[in-house]
Length: 135
Image (cartoon, rainbow, N blue to C red; front, side):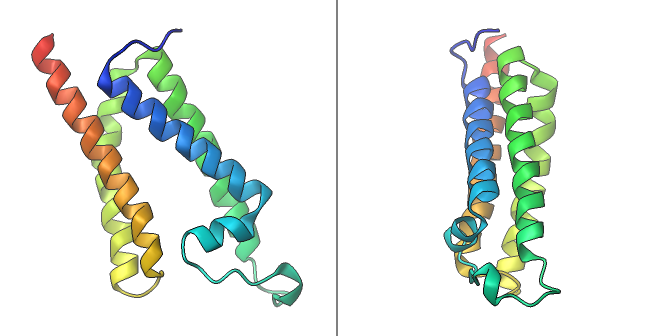
Protein backbone atom coordinates (compact mmCIF):
# COMPACT_ATOMS: atom_id res chain seq x y z
CA UNK A 1 0.00 0.00 0.00
CA UNK A 2 1.99 2.91 -1.27
CA UNK A 3 0.73 6.40 -1.91
CA UNK A 4 1.77 7.26 -5.44
CA UNK A 5 2.38 10.75 -6.69
CA UNK A 6 -1.03 11.55 -8.10
CA UNK A 7 -3.06 14.55 -7.08
CA UNK A 8 -6.41 12.84 -6.48
CA UNK A 9 -4.91 10.39 -4.00
CA UNK A 10 -3.09 13.18 -2.20
CA UNK A 11 -6.24 15.34 -1.91
CA UNK A 12 -8.06 12.38 -0.37
CA UNK A 13 -5.22 11.46 1.96
CA UNK A 14 -4.68 15.02 3.20
CA UNK A 15 -8.41 15.59 3.73
CA UNK A 16 -8.59 12.27 5.60
CA UNK A 17 -5.58 13.07 7.74
CA UNK A 18 -7.01 16.47 8.72
CA UNK A 19 -10.42 14.94 9.52
CA UNK A 20 -8.70 12.28 11.62
CA UNK A 21 -6.60 14.81 13.57
CA UNK A 22 -9.53 17.19 14.13
CA UNK A 23 -11.61 14.22 15.30
CA UNK A 24 -8.93 13.34 17.85
CA UNK A 25 -8.84 16.97 19.02
CA UNK A 26 -12.60 16.89 19.55
CA UNK A 27 -12.41 13.62 21.47
CA UNK A 28 -9.61 14.86 23.70
CA UNK A 29 -10.75 18.47 24.12
CA UNK A 30 -14.28 19.27 22.95
CA UNK A 31 -13.96 22.81 24.32
CA UNK A 32 -11.02 23.55 22.00
CA UNK A 33 -12.88 22.22 18.97
CA UNK A 34 -15.98 24.27 19.77
CA UNK A 35 -13.87 27.43 20.15
CA UNK A 36 -11.99 26.71 16.93
CA UNK A 37 -15.28 26.67 15.02
CA UNK A 38 -16.54 29.85 16.68
CA UNK A 39 -19.05 28.30 19.09
CA UNK A 40 -19.35 29.39 22.70
CA UNK A 41 -17.54 26.81 24.77
CA UNK A 42 -19.27 26.66 28.13
CA UNK A 43 -17.25 24.65 30.68
CA UNK A 44 -18.88 21.30 31.55
CA UNK A 45 -19.46 22.30 35.20
CA UNK A 46 -21.51 25.31 34.02
CA UNK A 47 -23.74 23.34 31.63
CA UNK A 48 -27.28 22.35 32.49
CA UNK A 49 -27.91 18.65 33.18
CA UNK A 50 -29.90 18.40 29.94
CA UNK A 51 -27.16 20.01 27.81
CA UNK A 52 -25.59 17.28 25.70
CA UNK A 53 -23.28 19.50 23.65
CA UNK A 54 -20.18 17.56 24.66
CA UNK A 55 -21.84 14.24 23.83
CA UNK A 56 -22.70 15.62 20.39
CA UNK A 57 -19.15 16.93 19.88
CA UNK A 58 -17.78 13.55 20.98
CA UNK A 59 -20.09 11.75 18.52
CA UNK A 60 -19.18 14.10 15.67
CA UNK A 61 -15.50 13.82 16.52
CA UNK A 62 -15.66 10.02 16.48
CA UNK A 63 -17.36 10.19 13.08
CA UNK A 64 -14.64 12.58 11.86
CA UNK A 65 -11.93 10.25 13.14
CA UNK A 66 -13.51 7.27 11.37
CA UNK A 67 -14.11 9.25 8.19
CA UNK A 68 -10.49 10.34 8.21
CA UNK A 69 -9.38 6.73 8.36
CA UNK A 70 -11.74 5.80 5.49
CA UNK A 71 -10.35 8.59 3.33
CA UNK A 72 -6.72 7.72 4.08
CA UNK A 73 -7.33 4.01 3.39
CA UNK A 74 -9.17 4.84 0.16
CA UNK A 75 -6.18 6.96 -0.89
CA UNK A 76 -3.66 4.27 -0.02
CA UNK A 77 -5.71 1.62 -1.83
CA UNK A 78 -6.48 3.98 -4.74
CA UNK A 79 -10.26 3.46 -4.61
CA UNK A 80 -11.02 5.91 -7.42
CA UNK A 81 -14.76 5.27 -7.37
CA UNK A 82 -14.86 6.38 -3.72
CA UNK A 83 -12.92 9.55 -4.65
CA UNK A 84 -15.57 10.33 -7.26
CA UNK A 85 -18.46 9.70 -4.88
CA UNK A 86 -17.07 12.12 -2.30
CA UNK A 87 -17.03 15.15 -4.60
CA UNK A 88 -20.80 15.84 -4.89
CA UNK A 89 -21.45 14.91 -1.26
CA UNK A 90 -18.77 17.30 -0.05
CA UNK A 91 -20.37 20.05 -2.17
CA UNK A 92 -23.70 19.25 -0.48
CA UNK A 93 -21.95 19.46 2.88
CA UNK A 94 -20.67 22.91 1.90
CA UNK A 95 -24.23 23.97 1.02
CA UNK A 96 -25.69 22.69 4.29
CA UNK A 97 -22.95 24.14 6.51
CA UNK A 98 -22.92 27.53 4.78
CA UNK A 99 -26.72 27.68 4.97
CA UNK A 100 -26.44 27.09 8.73
CA UNK A 101 -24.15 30.11 8.95
CA UNK A 102 -26.28 32.34 6.71
CA UNK A 103 -29.42 31.45 8.68
CA UNK A 104 -27.47 32.26 11.87
CA UNK A 105 -27.77 28.72 13.25
CA UNK A 106 -23.97 28.66 13.44
CA UNK A 107 -21.32 31.35 14.01
CA UNK A 108 -19.52 32.95 11.07
CA UNK A 109 -16.28 31.07 11.89
CA UNK A 110 -18.13 27.83 11.13
CA UNK A 111 -18.18 28.95 7.50
CA UNK A 112 -14.50 27.92 7.35
CA UNK A 113 -15.62 24.30 7.84
CA UNK A 114 -17.92 24.71 4.85
CA UNK A 115 -15.11 26.26 2.80
CA UNK A 116 -12.76 23.41 3.80
CA UNK A 117 -15.30 20.92 2.42
CA UNK A 118 -15.81 22.86 -0.81
CA UNK A 119 -12.11 23.42 -1.48
CA UNK A 120 -11.40 19.74 -0.82
CA UNK A 121 -14.21 18.66 -3.14
CA UNK A 122 -13.09 21.01 -5.91
CA UNK A 123 -9.46 19.93 -5.62
CA UNK A 124 -10.38 16.26 -5.70
CA UNK A 125 -12.78 16.81 -8.59
CA UNK A 126 -10.19 18.79 -10.53
CA UNK A 127 -7.50 16.16 -9.89
CA UNK A 128 -9.81 13.34 -11.03
CA UNK A 129 -10.69 15.30 -14.18
CA UNK A 130 -7.05 16.14 -14.95
CA UNK A 131 -5.90 12.56 -14.37
CA UNK A 132 -8.70 11.19 -16.57
CA UNK A 133 -7.16 13.05 -19.50
CA UNK A 134 -3.85 11.27 -18.80
CA UNK A 135 -5.37 7.77 -18.88
